Figure (tube, rainbow, N blue to C red):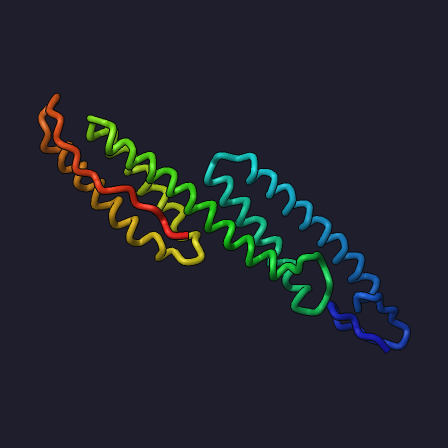
Length: 187
């Protein structure tokens, strides 16, 4: 007498597949796995083509959700994909972090370059505001959001200093550059 690993039905006349499933569950799971794998592959392609951070992060989150769905079956001992959903899930959580940190780091490099090369405090301010906005929008999507605390504080401090300089400056007056050194994000 066999017992289905998914629905837990059992009986003398219940036929069980080599994966330990009744035929109804086997068909349903096969369909679900195929659909989830298709979405994962499409999302990977979109991430590779896109330059938009929101798109990349939402697609990475989509992949993570699809893998979590497959993880349910792995936890019941039901084979789905190789490598196992748990291994892919860990990889994609890390990849999502790298996507976010790389984009914020690139924006920070642009802001630091403007701080050095631009004579306009308004342009410098705008560049640091973009970095701060990205940190605030995507930082909480990191596995460990605290990795951005130091950078967020530095960017906020710089933004506030620039706001003060803009507020106190006279039109046409260029003040000496006092922006911080380049700051790299941890990996």
